Length: 382
Image (cartoon, rainbow, N blue to C red):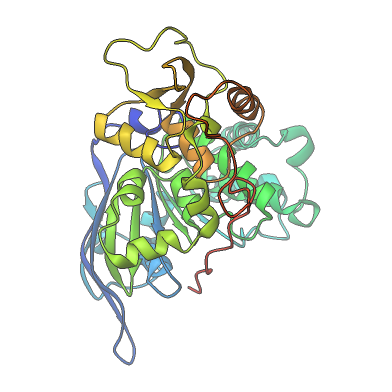
């Protein structure tokens, strides 16, 4: 089960390192220091999200990794090779690159756009056609309907799907994604994030994503690297950064989203899994929590106990449901589907509460913390 917010995450062991940055520095003309000793690693099959305020060096890092910019000092290794010794073109052909503006060639069909790198690699026509069809199916675009379309005939979401398919065309071990969902409306963005996680569960690439959105980082990332003024302020799993911010800046960066903080104070009863198998009495060593425990406190309890889920009990010790890292974080990020959990929460609220409190109610200010949309985090200007 995904440690925080989806089914796959903690199934990934800390294995072979695919991307390794050591004391990476980049200074531009005029002595402007964009990166100041950045060090981190990304393991095989992981999604690592780079996040931070505008101008912190996120996009610069991606450009250094695929040699669009020269490195000032330090080292970058991809799949065990120092990129300083590699030909830039050869290196880029081993990486998929997805950008916010998609960058499809307007004079080429969807099929031709996806086939660009395989064509450069001299794949046969039959192999290319088969690969294009496989990838269109993978991203949910029927080949018979989309292969011959031009980019101008696509919606923003469809174009972004084609961009992902093109990045995967030559089956690269590494994917670099620079705010790939940033230009889309919120509904389309969340849908594509979910679809991308489904694709990743099948292809298991090593992915480095630049994002300006903390909710997106929590939803997508196996690891998060938070940058500030060209330095790593904190790196680690999403739950570690969320529950144990290392500096006041990290705490402020997380706390800048009021909607996020409000959802953190919701009772865990509002994050119930819609389907769960264990409906027996609360006995043994299984983690149990009072139903009025907040979402943030429930996550902290799961981390402390290294548990995958917890059963919630009412004031009389009766089990009313179960929460997991996935269900709690979906509530925390505003992605929780109301069907099922809301119904179960309402059922509990309507029952007898010996303490006389309503754990599913609104906050004292009379607002519904689960209904507010979080304000947008400042966008990266890189």
